[in-house]
Image (tube, rainbow, N blue to C red; front, side, top):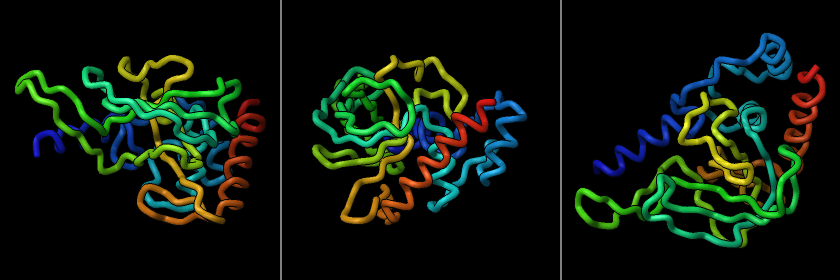
Length: 202
């Protein structure tokens, strides 16, 4: 129970949008207005799944990619118990990226020094990543949408996860089993990336 509570606190502070994470305060007025022109607030998280939620995810992400997990490894002593290697097949945002990126998850086994035991931490709000499933990943280094912290000052090919959508026929499925039309999601991703990188970059 204590472990699950601590895990939930970690998720609230460091990972999941919509759960009270510390928002960035250094957006320029031009960025705020540009994002607002396509209905993306930068001063609050959109907690419900839908077009505005996905658009905000794109805006807050350092990288948005399509890939599949090729390796899942435990890290019993690190702050992220599960480390997933993803083969990158398409990059919507975050160029340039290597052919593989590392995604660090809070869920998984970890060593508890106080008891000398290995415990399992399961993050209720963290997407589950499985091997070989084609997935859209919304990734952050801790600077996109959240205040930067030293714990999330990761390397250029290492990320933490904001959201994942798994390909399923013509849909993309979120962690809460919400189905999004695949073509509509891709159009929205490309639209927001174009807006943020061109109109809002001027």
